[in-house]
Image 1: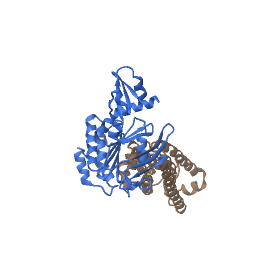
Image 2 (image 1 turned 60 degrees about the horizontal axis):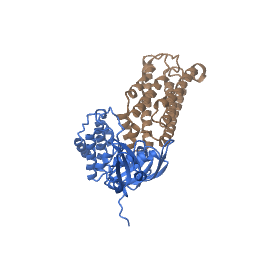
Image 3 (image 1 turned 120 degrees about the horizontal axis):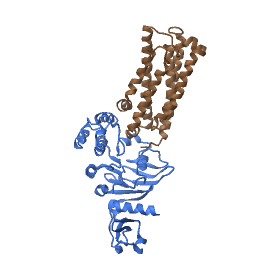
Image 4 (image 1 turned 90 degrees about the vertical axis):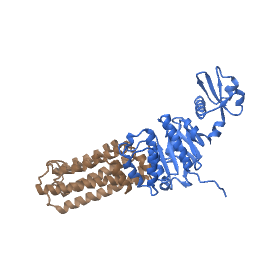
Length: 216
Length: 284
């Protein structure tokens, strides 16, 4: 909790606040909604960049905490931002359904399945970004570049799937409330991947950060 | 039964290997309530030693214990009892000191708010300022205020006086002496040896990754003498020499105290000893 507060008070970058608000992009017609989650990844990158510029790793390690605790706090803090993005996305989808939802030619329609798509995207991002970042905390840009590639690949595949894969085209890419059970299963699967991916990310990141020689 | 006091910091055989540098088997022990100066030229391995002691880098060998506790097994307890200050490091330069303190104090069960206020006032620090608005000397004082408010018994400082003007350095030296009077142990690395002449009890001299000397300040200085010669260095002096330097009027030569009288040698300063021994190593 103390480390989470440290993240909030000392490491938070304005982009960390602003990027989750990009969840509002689900209101835009004809937009690949996975990209709105990607912006939160960009916010996380800015937080890690701020941490580097402020010698956060060295500061944290002079506090009575272990390296593992420092890693877990950073990832948990970012996962909270991701969860906030998903929550905001759900609220904006509800709003869109109230004001009139329209079919989306650029990927999944704004609906329950979009939440599942976002969760899978965050699972991928966390699994790649954090272990790379904690291998060398002085190079968050490199970690972000490597994480962005599979994330965009997932977005492209998902858009293509809404045209080519029957389950995506005929079930997930339908306006709510059609196929709600299938969409709920897809979203639950996304949640499971998000939780498993983030847990694995923590495990790998702690191991790498433990081994790292910090250049102070 | 031995009555030896528990050392605030004991290092045994500390080794760290980099592709172009090796810290070799560094061992020493600090006495409680003393000031120890850790000297050596830039690149000698002082910061690597401190980083290894504090586990910022992972040593390849050796053991470190604080207050008799193994560093690897008791890191949390140890970190509550020590303070680290580095001159080259500036944390959260755009955040107000107040905000940084707010965060730091939550990590220490023994945080003494009254002591913090007293230190801030004594050092002339204002909480509404940011580190970016402080001079280098004031930044170090702020870091010291934080460390002392959580009750640090051992202060480890990496080049705290580097880049400071003589007056600020003098002020810091006075702070160190006051801390010593309070029973704190101070361990600081520097290449500005004149600061140590004023306050250190003990000297550790690191040369090319090896601990070349571990002695009291007086013992270290007393082991050497400086001979001066105007023109060419006589053969006898050349044979006894442990490094010589060109100066305006000729040469200065470092010689061991034994036999130095024959050359009319005088006492050597810490700086002269360090420079001449480095010259000797360069020439070897």
